[in-house]
Length: 186
Image (cartoon, rainbow, N blue to C red; front, side, top):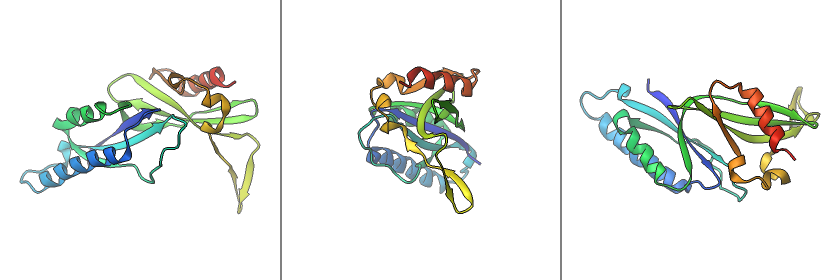
């Protein structure tokens, strides 16, 4: 089984989907070509999931899937350099992640935390919010309706560098998320 990694593209500026898909398709073709060769081994490849955290306020066409591409281990740095050359921020992350939650002034804020691959760092994003008592019933199962954080005026006025937070991996995620949200909620 291939070792899995996440290529995280984040920020207000992200490459267009067509660029991402073109790169993924190119590397997939390399993989298919190599697969036909004698001595092929899946162990020589990483399975790369290309994930996004778009922090911009303009509408970005969403896609219904996460591109996944097999990249030969010896070509990983070349693959990453292709994305580094495009506009926007990127980092290589581990597959494991967290969903921290913070409760402030009657609202529940949920985030997403990625663990960076080669650094002892993690990166936090705000994802959505909901009133704490906003419980609706779907059949017999209670459900909380969720809203995009991008609809809130205080979020819209945040400078780009405050829309995510990078911290050391050994810091408690829930505590750091709670402190961060309290700092930026107005």
